[in-house]
Image (cartoon, rainbow, N blue to C red; front, side, top):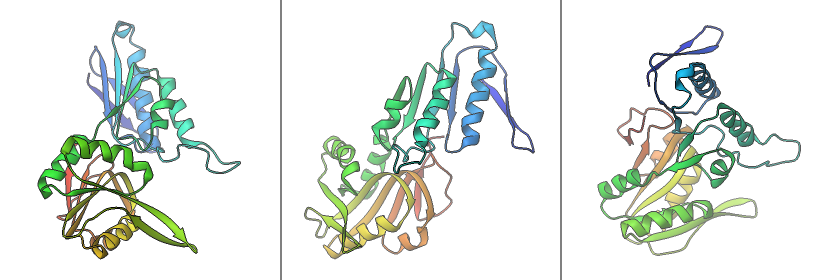
Length: 251
């Protein structure tokens, strides 16, 4: 199904369907403009009565607001809930999401399923050569453990705690003279990963690599380069042009 998007100078988004048939939208989905593009495409497709018995699927590669998966404080908005309601209002038969931050997104979005990032982690793993997988926090441990089982790899859990208000990384396991691959879903900044990499190196790690599916790096990227040997990611959020980054194309 081909379609085109027109963006006006006042930021209005309009869509036009160019052919009949099943609808398959693939989009980064990391901005509110993307959400309105999705809605415009679906509305234009729905308006054609010949599509009544056809299917409409949506693939989102970096869901906006996915970290806002609860109401963090009283009187604050539950952003992922709002975003999910908007997506649900479009009425897709299937919604696929690449490596969502938590299962809350899949619970809130109708007819949703996860697109696994395992193949990209495997590519990074094979490129390095059998590194130890490192889970950066408790939330990432379950997924990282599943990857370790599939790859027949060792896994080391870690967690960030605060001692007298100062962040401290706690690592459980032996990484002495071993390559390590930190695996996580999203990197907003690089500070936590730098702290973890520094601690791994203090414990004798030979080299420390990082894999994140959604590489935002809105801050701390240059600082991270001082601690990480190389970064692997997808282009779900944006495109990188940096020799320090190996990027797997998903969109």
